[in-house]
Each structure stands twice: as C-alpha cells, then as structure tokens.
Amino acid sequence: MIYEIVILAMIAAFLGLRLYSVLGNRAEHEEETITHRFDSGDSTVDQPVREAPPAAPVQVVSNQQPTNLLPVVEEGVRAIAAADRSFDVTGFVEGAKGAYGMVLDAFWKGDKDTLRELCDDDVYAGFAGAIDARTAAGETMDNTLIRVEEAVIRDAELDGRTARVTMRFVSDIAAVTRDKDGVLIAGSLDDAVESRDIWTFARNVDATGPDWQLVETDEG
Image (cartoon, rainbow, N blue to C red; front, side, top):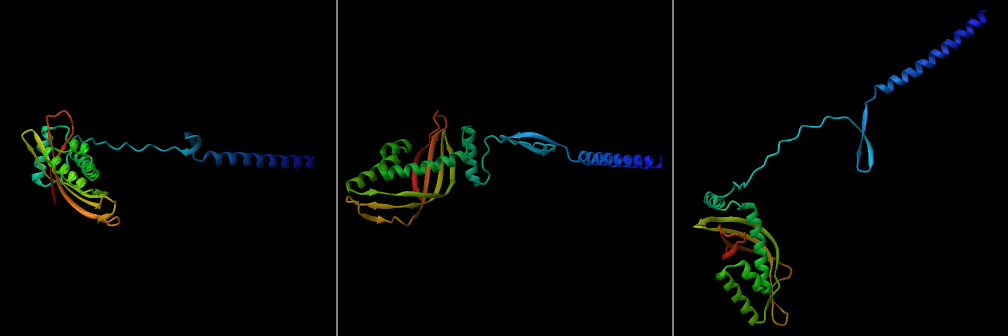
C-alpha cells in the first residue's frame, strides 16, 4: 500500500512539473511585443506598431519675390510684377542665364537666325556686323562657355508698358580664334578667361508671348 502511494506521489510531481513548464513558456511568449505584418515592395516585413507623427503644415507662397535686392532694384521689380502677374524673379534670372549662353553661342558660330530671334534690331546689327567682318577675314571662333559664376539683377524698371531688366553676368570662357587655315591665332585651349557683361532685356508687358529680347550690351 505504502509502495503504491509513493508511486502515485511521484507521478503527480512529474505532471506538476510538466504543467509548470508549459504555462511558464506560454506566459513568457505572451509578454513579447506584438508585431503586425505589412507589405514593403515584394517582401513582407515584421514591424512594431508605431503611431504616425503629425503631418507638418505646408506653406504655399504665390509670386514671391526675393528680398535681397537693392531698394531701387526691388522697386522696379515690384512695378514689373504688378503690371505682369506672370513675372517671377527666379524664373527670369534662370531664363536670362539661358539666353546669355544662347546668344554667345550663336555669335561664336555665326548663327544670325538665332540672334535675330533673341535680340532687338540694334543689338542684332552689332552682332551681325562683327560676324560679317570675321567671315571676310576668314576667321572662326571656337569659344566655349565654361560656367556662369554670377548672374544678378543690376537694375529693373517699368517704362510705360515696357519692362526692362539689366543683368550682370560674370562667366568663364575658353576663347579661341583661328585663321582661314585653322591655325590658332588668338586665345588658348587650356585657359579660361573671365568675362564681365552687362546685358539689358526688355519686354512689352501686354504682349501675349513670354519672350524677352536683348536690347543692350556692355562690358562690366
């Protein structure tokens, strides 16, 4: 009898240890952080649940003009912007830089058609005359605009219904001139020369097209 009681006690102790082991492991797993699954590209990734941060406010500014202009320049810019609601200083400066490169490239290549589109009559006549003289001498220009170091508005005004903006360009140009035989007679293939130009662009604010024309050039 005593022997049977000891056997039953040992069995009960064994079952108790097994039950404790199972419940203990289950409790430990239930304390782990719960994760959710979501698709990221083509793979599924486990990520802990986090609250999304509040969205930052979005600021929209319409027709904003730079405030780092000289007072006389800013006055002219505001007058032009009031007469032409599409005028934007940043866009104009970028467009003027592009026109600067196009005009120089057309002059160097002797492309009168492009110059005719970008310049008024007086400026075009000056460029065309220089091209004709160069052609008569049998010379060619093999210049390259390396970079525009500076492009700033020097002056701006609204003259009646004509907007005029004067730009100052500082650029690096590799200038080469060759004779009729292709021999280098001026400039260098290796050294860039700094060029400083003052160009004035004009446009009728009532015109339907957005094109500005180069109306004056000078060295600066």
